[in-house]
Picture (tube, rainbow, N blue to C red):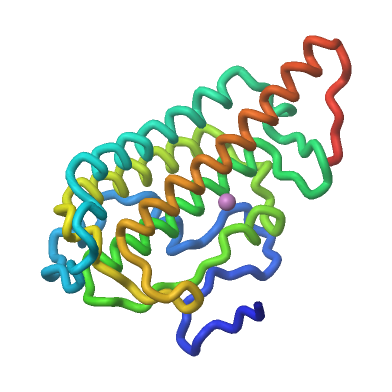
Length: 225
Ligand code: NI
C-alpha cells in the first residue's frame, strides 16, 4: 500500500543526518521531566464506551500493565554483561545490533507516549504517523551510550504505565484517528506496545543466545559491520 500521509500529518524526520539521536518530540522533551502537569489529568470524559462488556476490566488492565512493566526489566537483564562489541555487532547486514534494538524500543516508547497523551487528553485527536524503524539505520545508534538509552526507555515506560494506570477501564476505549490505521483506542495502543515488546524481546534473546554459543564454541563472533 502506498503510504501517503494526509496533509498536516506530523512525521519524524527521516532525512539522513549527522546527529546520532532521534527527534520524536526530542524523545518526549528529553524524557518526561514533569510533563506539563501530566497532561492526562486534564482529559475529557470518555466518548466511546459502547464496546462489548468484558473488553477491558480492572483485571485485564492489571495484566497488561504488569506485562508492560516487566518488559523493560527483561530487556535490561538480557543486555547485562555484554561487551560493547557484542552490543554493536550486526549478525547480518539487514539485522539490527542489540544496541540499535534498545534505541529503537526507546524511540517507539516515545511515540507511544505521544499517542497515549493525545488520546487521553483530547477528543478523537488526529494521531501522527511516525516511522521509528527508519531512524535505526539512518542514525548512528551504535555510538549511543547504552545505559543512557536504557534509562530513557525505563523513564518513558514508567510514565506511560502511570498514564495507563490513571485511566478507568472505560477510558481505555477513548480513541484517536490514525492516518493509516483509522480509529485507535488506548487499549489498542497498549496492545501494540505489548506486541512490539514481545517481538523485539524474542529478537534480543535470539541474538544473545547466538553470542553465547559463539563464545562457548570459541569462534570469533561473526560480524557484518
Ligand atoms: Ni519495532
